[in-house]
Amino acid sequence: MERYIIKIERNKSQILFDTISGMGIAPDFSVFYLAAKTLVEGNNPYTAQGLFTGVGYPVFSLIPFIPFTLLPYQISQALFTFLSITSILICVLLSLKIINWRLKPFHILILFTLTLFMFPVRFTLGMGQSNNIVLLFLLSGLYLYQKKKINYSSLFFGLSVVLKPITIFLFLYFLVKKQFRLIINSLVIVFIFLLITLSSYYIYYFNNVLPPLLNLSGREIYYNQGMMGFISRLTNDNKLRLYLNYFISFAIFVPVVYRLRKIKDAGIGFSLFLVSLVLIDTLSWQHHFVFLIFPYIVLLKKIFEIRSKYYLFLLVLSYILVAGNIKNPQLFSSPLILSHVFIGTILLFIVIIHIILICLPKKRMSKDQEKGPAKEELIKQIFL
Image: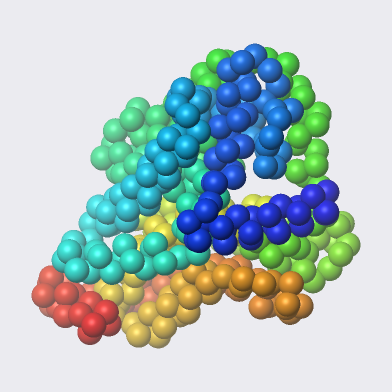
């Protein structure tokens, strides 16, 4: 398993380089494409020929890729890449809409630029991953949830789980909020996809695919930037890795759930869960950190409101650590250097918790501070 993951890391590094050079083939999309095509032909998608890596998702996650198999691969790849780029740009606009932040076109353009500059975004595009589309589904669901359109909201949250099952973790947010109808409706969507693909391939998935994914060996690879990746760079003991991950994840998650009960702001509450997701997931590939785009935008607005240059500095530092990438990680041995994305995410988590617990309850904005022109002037001072 360890050698298998290391091989994936080396392959992904080369593919990303090829993609930036204009020669990329979106290998992860090719996996979904070939697996979906094999499924349509009535064969086991997990044993399809020519796969770049193994398929790590359940069968129902292949259904959204079936329409792409109706087109030649190159056309499908270009279409998927276009959808992915469009999704990430819409996510920025939707984030502003969710938190009701009105910015001038120039400032929105800066947010677009900072978003596209992030390595996790470029990694997602280069690998042909679905993270940008999944984030669009999540934010669409959150926006509709704010509008109290539960049925439509459930559809998007259900589709996000279909594409990326790990996002079912975010249902805990709605569980804390006692939104049982939304959770049930979303699970019904997933169950429908499950029924459509009900076959013996699920037995193969649980017996042959899932067990290696649960193995903690090889989790220290550079592109795994979650809590488990950091811990694995400190120790080779798999049992110690497991126990430390459980303990620290529990220490992170309990305060989130406890505080969330009193947070009425859906933007800040959902941001906490997005940050927790990439920290707690035992295999948080670097491209998963596109989910932090929404928390960054939410925090940026909060920092402008409380007018804190100290928090702005911490947020910028967090962004730099998350947005960066080490081209040759094998040249470094320091766990801290190799865990820069993890450290940046932890810093983001601390800032958002600190603002919620300390600053917001004590610092209430005056009416003069709430006026639009003052906010715009602060933005100009920082951005320009």
